Length: 359
Ligand SMILES: NC(=O)C1=CN([C@@H]2O[C@H](COP(=O)(O)OP(=O)(O)OC[C@H]3O[C@@H](n4cnc5c(N)ncnc54)[C@H](OP(=O)(O)O)[C@@H]3O)[C@@H](O)[C@H]2O)C=CC1
Ligand SMILES: O=C1OC[C@@H](O)[C@H](O)[C@H]1O
Image 1: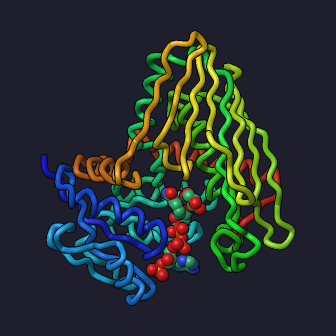
Image 2: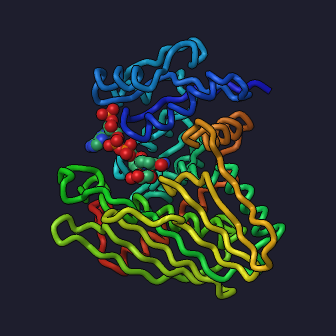
């Protein structure tokens, strides 16, 4: 079945570029039943928006004959050719922009973290229900083929046996000291710090690999945590979370903006074997190896496709919308709330408050 889906891309920045790259590549290859059409770029600067179109090679021949509109944010939300808005702006803007999109009857795929706290997340989830629109947090990691395969190996085939521990470290040297204080990584008003930006992935891996359930069906767990707050910026650049599930298995989940992490960035230990994962960007699970205690042949997997990996979530969103679904089974809104609540708890334990927490 051919599916056409019309995207509006909000914010002509880094992640929107990477997302749009995959949509255009998919159209160019021509072997996807889903045609992703970029209808509009919502941007604060049309010059920047034009550069975005040029540098990402959005052309009529890879965009179903369409040259996207360049629109101000206000024009963008009332564009009636847009089916679904992709929100690719800094974290604190997400809430208001998701509300604007929903109020204009658009479906929404919103970048992680969905909002700054779970109360705000809940507010927009309720609005999406009221407006009868699809809404999802863009946790692209969950949609990679490697993750589907790993869940089968771990939970159905039980290749690793009984799972005992998971170590995940998302760390890269962001050269914080030399970034302008207005950078979204540093500025508390732009949701700066590591937990909401990259710690969310360490938590996501724990949710994927330590629990075969998702959202409201999740297995019970407990957490303890440490954040180190920068005395000047007042946000965290180092975060450590311990997670313990009711059956005793533990997650040791860390992240840092101060240092490049070691490879493999992830190790899952079971009674029969060990899973390790490698990635230049741990959000993209493109390579893993499972080794066995009984010396049977290891299982190795590597995804060498030219896609960044956003195509998997984009296809899932398009299919859900065409079917009239309001949320996605792989990344339901209750899972967003669950992860947001973990981050609320970690922040409360460590005194990290954003302006949004006070409103
Ligand atoms: N899924 C993933 O792997 C990744 C997700 N992200 C998420 O995407 C979001 C955006 O991150 P990223 O693309 O790196 O950020 P960028 O700063 O590169 O881009 C954000 C864009 O948002 C727009 N914007 C609107 N208001 C502001 C403002 N006050 N300050 C800065 N930008 C503004 C700008 O677009 P314009 O000028 O066109 O209006 C800007 O280019 C974050 O929430 C982040 O967590 C980020 C990286 C990877
Ligand atoms: O989501 C993300 O993944 C990759 C990181 O480099 C980036 O800061 C973050 O937003």
